[in-house]
Image 1 (cartoon, one colour):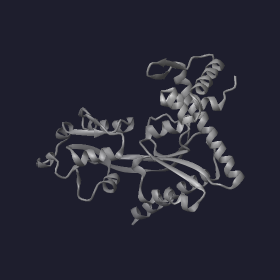
Image 2: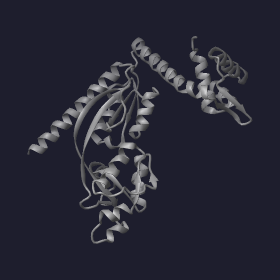
Image 3: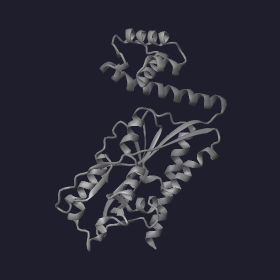
Image 4: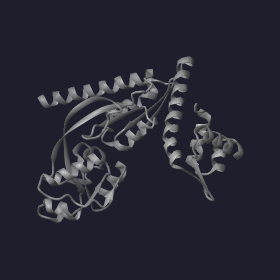
Length: 312
């Protein structure tokens, strides 16, 4: 059984739109042509991919399984076509980078922002998300590489990981400067346990928060707000009475000056590992190799500068 890439694109469009008419319009083909294309795909596979409803179409269990495969196949095909075009006509192609919010330091972002200037024919896409979301996009073939912290306990056995740097990181509880808890003579762990916490739904982040309290032989607080972007988390701390556990580097870099305070005696030191992650079947184009080498060199220089500063 051979899968026709054109029919897979038709199938994905129908699944994403949930409506045959809208999908056909997006593909610039007729509704009947799209319907027939999907029927042929179903016949080839021997499985029904969609349930028809008065409101449109929904994926069957077979359709849901095919959907992820189809997206990977389409993305891989697109990458291959772009890569071959780059080899044939000298264009730079495209590279899609994912990065976690805690790593968006000015120096690293300057490196990434310089790519269009240093490689004028290269199209660059930068996606900032938390670790779990980036890894999902990487596995779907929608990113070429991810620069991220490497959480303990996360399964990366199907991916290639190059560790870039490892070192201690200071985490502190942060709140806005006029938070009601600041009226207390001393902010106790018990008061923090009862506070309104904003957290991300990332497993490793929740583990850090839990450890903060279990180290004090206390039950962790009830998390009532989950922010799945760094900007929302920061705004929750600044605009409301939420507290958060963040690295001191993030606190210093991302909050407006003199807008927040770290709770005294709330610091914990953890080990942070940063890595470059990519799929085993990633097309290691010239741009991919050049960027990975630049990122590796960036962290080597950063680590050397930190050691020099510590020595003095």
